[in-house]
Image (cartoon, rainbow, N blue to C red; front, side, top):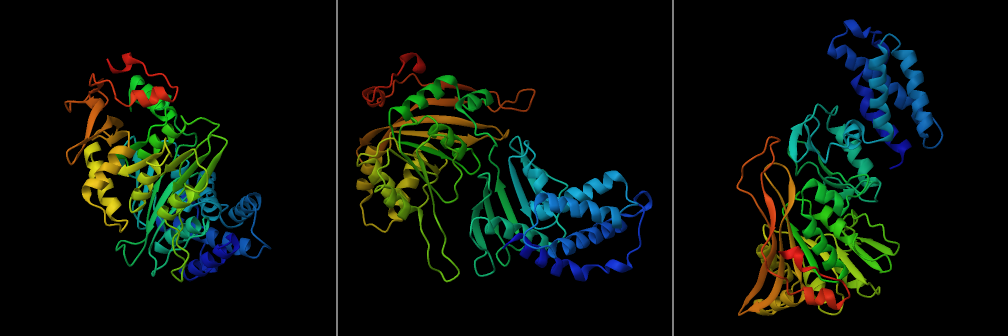
Length: 446
């Protein structure tokens, strides 16, 4: 929907709520909260009315000019500070994502959770906090939702009440609305940093050690197949983005995601995004179809944002048929659990394969598992780097290379005491890395 169309819809929703001409001019120092809201609603209605009558979609400068004019005309008695607040609120509503626009611009906020119109939580430093941001009503939340989904050509309504989307900056969005959500329209936004994190940032944050970073750098450049495992919100995609940054700029990279989030800086990157079905139930393009298609695109690297279904089989086949250096993530509670998860997802492909054959495929395809965790103190750390060493009977064998240890004690800043340590095992995959011309230093593992 165009900006002009949204303005018309906003006017239809707002008009019955207030008798505009009957409202007296109120001086803010003596006004009650309800009176202030009445002034704000009056100004809002007048701004929308004037913008709606303009030809085409108004520019940012035109919107700001109309807001300033209306404020001078209908809220001249309001203090300059309150006029500024009203102006910002209206500008964000027309040109941005309404009340949550300020949260999106706050670098300290990593996640935004809108639970209906009256409750907005944010994540700061890994901890959840209730913000003072609210919406007018459910319709105001729906207007923000329509802005988000319209920007990427998707839709959400009662017949299709769930959708994954992304913002222009790559931030991941999940939306679920009534009748599935009983508390009103719900929005969850996982923000991405304006500037993508580098491996040096993760080392500085304490997410991994320098030796672990050097080893992962060698693994990527040495064309090992790597899976990043972890729970929801543990930082898997951020770590995957960092690992992708180790890929040489002269390689052809194909990325495949549900909602494009990866921010690669290499020159030769092809970004593919799955597509849900349209209103008629047609046109769906799944991750699995994109993985199959990527194999015909002459990729040097295939990077799948997250494996969660039958595409696991196609990913394993790609890894086993010459597409070395593939990267992906998977929800799992441990490296061992990731093996079971991938085995289950292969069965979701609808192919009748014995469990032993699937495990053999996993053992020969995946070289290294990097497990990321979000700890109770809110920090995100690489808690385990393991390599798959083959099969022992009917079990996939693996060994830990690096681990993070903590006894659960906190320091003065409320963070876990802990340390990264090597297990002392020299990885077998070092031979493959060296075969591809990448040095591996033994002191990383001492």
